[in-house]
Length: 296
Image 1 (cartoon, rainbow, N blue to C red):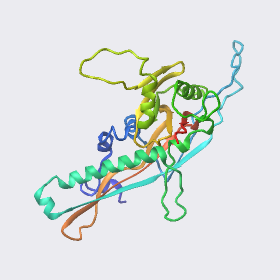
Image 2 (image 1 turned 180 degrees about the vertical axis):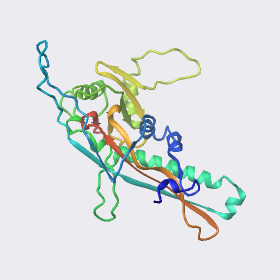
Image 3 (image 1 turned 90 degrees about the vertical axis):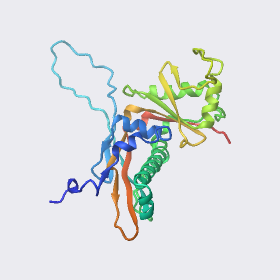
Image 4 (image 1 turned 120 degrees about the horizontal axis):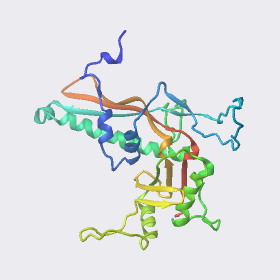
């Protein structure tokens, strides 16, 4: 039987380790998930059971009693589609003669472009099973996965949120805290405009060690009664949203890890493709919250 392991190194080159190290600043979410370890899918639709905790309140029993009652959380079956990401690379024979590393550089650029595209889809992707033209499967991203009860769009007075304030930060963390989630780190993906607003909130409420060569104020994390919220700047978050998640519930899953495949040589050039097939696994919709700001 001919298996994938029969391919030689020149026919199929894994780039799974390389993609984890590329463009960390441009792809903070993807880099975070890859650092935790990617999962493995076995079909074009990845399914899993929702991660929940049993909430039975009375679990006290008499000494020596038999166990006749068994708890089981109501766990919905969730799924997401595997999306194919592909970029082509072509280098002429002349360019190869002028620089032996030209093809490797082109492949590295294409790999980074794929990672940036995956980052965007992990945040903004909308599920599509690919059953209609153009027959492209698409994964659902964080915004689509967020539980409807975790969407915050009103301030403490019931009005649309025009500017981020401390209430927004506390409300985001309180909302997730009330969901009885398992322990994990909390991250807020935020765009540049709203990050500047956040920095302004705490401009006069901070402590620091004085340095003569470093000026300005950047809020990286905020301590609340409900946990520490770490802020991560991302170019891919919509201008009117902040996305908060518990990292214990998220995983990047591959059907095909990023790799390079050469294509048939048809002239005086070397051609190949960088390809990956991936999706997002969200252990529970309740572990994702979205703040919506009416900045129109």
